[in-house]
Length: 179
Image (tube, rainbow, N blue to C red; front, side):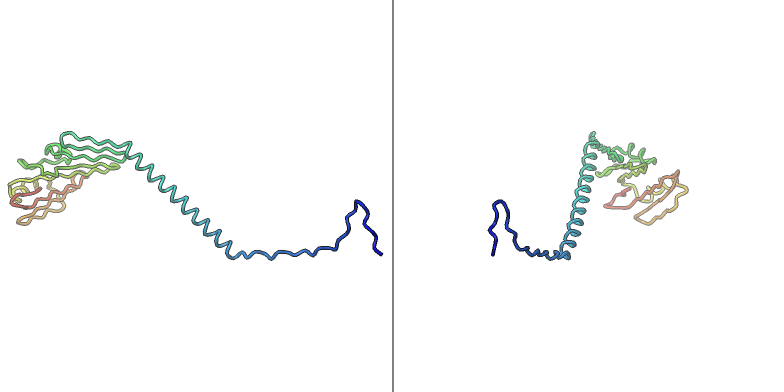
């Protein structure tokens, strides 16, 4: 005979069987995590690189100065300077050699640049004199030239005087001699 339940008591129930869930498959989750980490690192590196490049150009723009005085242009940057001029005497002073007498500065004129202690300068002149006459003017100025070549319509002199590399080239072009 069954006993009736007493007030305030809970009837005992049969134990409920416990089922353990099967472990999740970890083969796809681990690979996905690795891919997401790699993608995240690439994005972070990309953002840092873009920020660095942007900062570099911002700094260049705010610390560079450009001046134009009657066609003589000067650009000064944190890394060096670039200058152009149409004045043959000033251009020759920049190079440290004499300008060919009577020669006219070509439209592209001359330029000089200084970056990190390295200085380069170039001049472009034109004259009606012959290539031989131009080379005869410059050869005595560089007696220790490493290379001197001369042909009918072209002459080159390469010298390393006083630690400076100097190249003088003259060629016939359009009935005139370009230096």
